[in-house]
Image: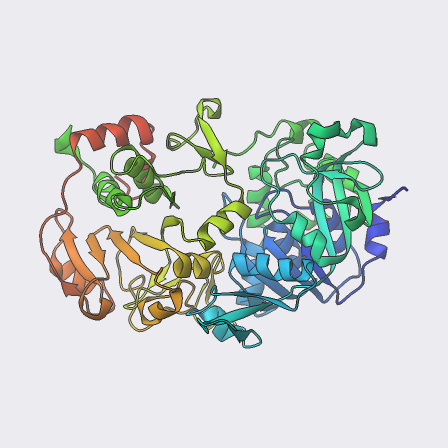
Length: 289
Length: 251
């Protein structure tokens, strides 16, 4: 079984109007080469679900987003995401703003093929005011507590970036925090992976390596080899986030032209060269929080 | 050294008392002063507190501010985001946070300012506030006590619930303490109104009233206790040896 694809092949499998879940967290381990490929495509009217970072911002800047389902959008060391803010402040996107745990719960409900999962989270807040589609459920037990019925967040596609994969889609996330990538994969009809390294199954490291296999290969539709594909976000332990680039990207919210001409509409290899080359990215130290 | 105690140090000392009676839970201080305060709490008030390295691992000693050699971190456990969520849904956590707005009910906002559908200022998003405030105790640090922060009426987008909805939290909602640049407060006034517990040196009741957009009770006008010699040594030599805390008030 060979699931190896190109960026273009993944894009060809997507269509406008889809609901796309994006793995990672803030400015950490985002499938940025796939995101840039979407930005450069004709795709539009996407619904995104993300623990958001520059993935959300870049897609907003390219007017690809119809609706965003989110708890936050942040570049970590730069707390607020300028491109996302601009889209919100100009009323360019619809939003379903949720607690980050409600996002997890919605993905988990989808992963378990359930219509909803109950929670107290959201009660007493304007999350409910601004999402009137959220309904309630009364506990059938003696407590009769009234709870939020967090609906399943079913995804057409999940896009995830990992450290290592074989051609069958046996992936490994070696960074210390796998975030919620597993739930995105389980909530999606198809999951496309971008991977720092593509190795043989024998090179996955046997039992010790398998600890880093966060979800099974049957969930993986395709794998794109994308060394440094998370740039400018971090991909621990391989490289940290590129603060200089993130700053330049953030500042580009005022005028996107220059950033776009320097870094967009390129192949992945050309992009890596444009941001200083693979050696430079390899040397970006891991962030300290 | 005590004749040059800074406002940041007074706030850190006051804020550290928030975790005193919490037992063995996860202490999370988000932002400069809350993080140093949580560390000080662990080194003085409550050594049983659990604390992360700011990323994924539980460590035995609080991580000092600024660049450090992480190979010296004594890792004792694991706290991925998924596990943080599991932990907080179970209520075993006390966070100290800095919302952009807070109102007379203790409701907090980090989402957006202005009309929700086209906000004047888009902020972070509600992030974990709905879940944090309904599931576990929280405290608040506000570096710029003003009517813009302590708003008249309700906050623009209720991200963290407040006392008006306390009954929804299965008994877990509590704002333990609010520390600002002017003083120390809690919400144990009549009908859970915000009340002044102590004033920092130089601050007056009028300053507090003028800079709060709602009625608050004055339970005490005493001066906030100064940090002890032990606390000052820990803040200055262990938790924040590079003096990053001084940036918060431009000291």
